Each structure stands twice: as C-alpha cells, then as structure tokens.
Image (cartoon, rainbow, N blue to C red; front, side, top):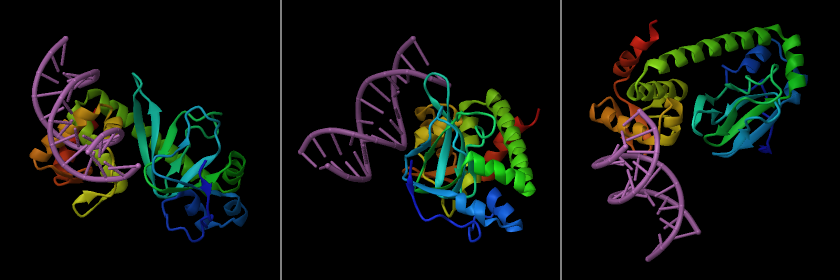
Length: 236
DNA sequence: TCATTAACTGTCG
DNA sequence: CGACAGTTAATGA
C-alpha cells in the first residue's frame, strides 16, 4: 500500500465532480471525513490487485490511474482511466468480496479511501450519496455496453481513434498536446490491439494531419473529423 | 561507454 | 491483423 499522507478535507477539496464531496456540500459529516484514509502512490505503482479482498472505495484526489482487466491471450485491457474526483473499485464494492479489476497509478497520485463499513454507513446516512452512486453505476453500465457494441464492429484504426477521443475526454488538451503522457502500449491496451498497430495508426493519422505527435506526446488537430469517423458506430 | 527502454518500420503467415 | 525482428533515438548507470 501507499504511504499515508495528510488527509485531504472534503470541505476544502476542489474536485467538484467527486460524489463524496458533492454530498458533503449538502450536509457535511465530519465523522466520515475523519475516517477517510489518504494514500499516495508513485507512477507505476499498483494499488488494486485483481482478486485481492475489497477494501472499500477509492476516490482520486490528485493524479491519474488506469483500471485494468485481464484480456485474451495474456494481454491486459484498460477498462477506463480515472482522474481527479473519479471513483475506483466500485465494481467490487458491495456485491463481490474480491476486486474483479486491477488499478495502477499513471503518475504521482493521491487517493482517498473509505472502508466498506464506513461507506455503507454513509450510504444509509446520506441519501444524496446513494442516489449519486446509483446514477454513476447506471452511466457506467451504459458506457461499457456502448463500448462493447462499438468495438465489435470496429477496425483497429477506429478503435485507436476511439481511444484517443476517450483520452481527450478524460484528461483534456491544453495547447498542442493532451494533458497526459501514455505509452503506445497503454493506448493499445485501451484500444484492444497491440503496440505496433497503434504506432502505425498514429503515424497515418499524423500524415493525414488529424493529430500531431512529438515523442510520447499526442495532440488532436481535427477532433471533429475524428468524432465524425466514429459516430456511425453509435447508431444501432 | 554500454545497457535499457520506447518509438517506429518491414516482412511474413 | 497479429507476431516478430530489427533500427533508431533518448536516457541513465
């Protein structure tokens, strides 16, 4: 596990999209805030092991992480990325006793962690939190269904484009490049292909002036065109 | 200077 | 499209 740090206070936290913070904004409960654990991880450190016992819920206070699931022929698939305010570990929470996924920090990351007991108590005590979490589950379920449906019909090129647009959505782009540096390997784990295919696709997209790359950095140039290419898969 | 890592390219089944 | 080999560039011991 990571090293304990000064615990962030939900009262002063700037992650306005965080479910817990939102609920605390309605009614602040100091006793829950104080039961929260803050953990710090360096880039590359895994903080959830697939198959390990569920230890409550994690919320990203600062930094970024990838959530992975084992794919076919000993590859890993990146299920999603999580950044400031996002919840991690919700799939195992409540229903499972072990995590069905793994999670690893992509950069220096601080996580807030609530134990199962504490968070269950919070859910009973704070209806806004329960409703917020339910809406989140519904959205997640929908998103993953859409992704599965799209991926089943897409060629590598479009899966890579989807991956780039997703990365853009999560981390954004300031200036010429997106606000995260990912290896080609990580992108291939997200697009469900291999590193070489990603490299090839990126270089043709670059030749077509749809993106720019510089070392590991990637920036979108013609986002609308990329979105357009993906849009047809959203139908049906 | 050497070893390692990652981006990238070519080729083959 | 995936697998593999090989080149190149950056980095760091």
